Amino acid sequence: LLELEINGARHARCFSFSSAPRTDGLIRLTIKQKANGPVSAAAHALKAGQIVRLSQAQGDFAPRGNSQKLLLLSAGSGVTPMMSVLQNFANEKSERDVVLVHCGHNKNEIIFAEELRQLFTLWPQLKLFLHATNNHGHLNPEKIAALVPDWNERETLLCGPDGFMQMVEAMYTDAGRSAYLQSESFGRRAAPIDPNAAEHLVSRENTEQVFTVMAGQSLLDGAEAAGLQPKFGCRRGICRSCQCKKLSGTVTNLLTGQVSGPGEELIQLCISTPQSAVELAL
Image (cartoon, rainbow, N blue to C red; front, side, top):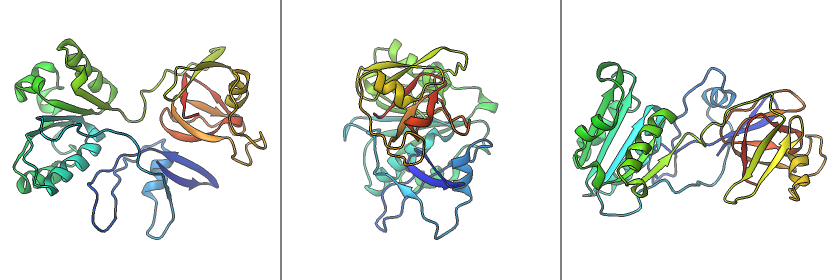
């Protein structure tokens, strides 16, 4: 979780490491600048010496075994977490059978294309397929099977845009191979926004508990009405005692009217009202 101060307010987003751990302790995050992304814009504007906040690394998106054949499937910036996995294998001179199939819009826009070719030179154990969709069409189950005939014998890591991931997940479900597939989306899947809804469902991470928050009601008031006891202080958006991580969904800041992104970020429960289904680390 990367946290930056923007116009006096703290904003946070989750990003994947795009390099393996280094002996000098440096890490690399690959952040695509978005036109309406305040955090990505602020990250691109950082200068050497500025201070940011980083949480401890989280998640378990990594190969489960040490010897089973491995397939990495990625599209667009979904290759980011794959880079750290591949660099780690290369650093260890692993003899594991690894295939990466990575696609982008055209051959000049495939992220990390040159770095991947260099990695292949250093670690020829890797089988590398770079797929440009404007020349060869979008990947589908038939094309994946043609590139990797033994795909259904491999443990698989998957990351990319929703449409790409849904196609691969359906492919594995149809083949009865879902248990061998790990998926990492860009945060959680975006929930549809409905500003005209009278209420929205809010769920808690790693629990089955779901509660309802009325339109215009703060998440703090909704949680308390459901019998929960989240931390709070001023209840006016000043002290940040009620700050928690939103895992998915869109909320509106009741003080500023600013609409959040659909993914992971820090919000204040007392001044946030949902615009879609929301999942909280509460």
